Length: 63
Image (cartoon, rainbow, N blue to C red; front, side):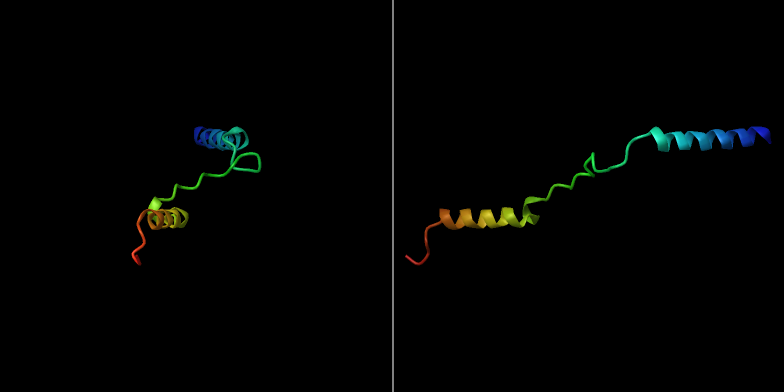
């Protein structure tokens, strides 16, 4: 029984030490997780520029 209590105590101390001195969570001094890159076909800015380039490159159909 004493070994079980000792194991629980050691585990509790280990968790507290991990929380105190382990990896730092994101705060003001560290940026948060990066945003996933947007696929080109989902990026409205990319689609707008692509449309403008296509309009400039093809001759006017009215002529």
